[in-house]
Length: 141
Image 1 (tube, one colour):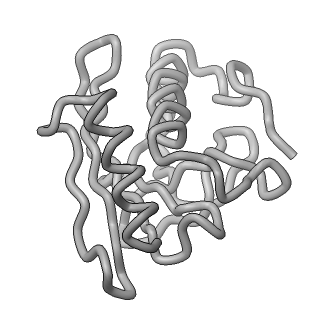
Image 2 (cartoon, one colour):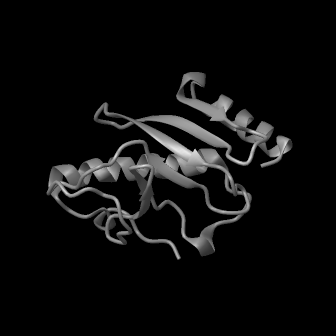
């Protein structure tokens, strides 16, 4: 991500979210990241880790910075179409938030954040009901 894109993304986040909810790290290096706080409607707080090493040309990897578990107690570490997850890394659950054919370099990190925030709401609905996340969220191509 070049400096102009970084400044644009930072400007959007500054307008939309409190400064304490996000933190860019490693900008200008080969391993840039963004950490964001996400509080669900039920009041639970999650930390999201965005791998920006290929952003904006590729979909950023987004992880919940812990290994989440399903209602039945299974770790959400692998690819699951029904739960909208991808292979985990770092011991963290990875959220599937965009389909490859839906991605364009014009998508903002704020929009990715909103989709991940929605995923967290559906994850918590899964914990309450046992229904898979696909019950609540449609798949993108």
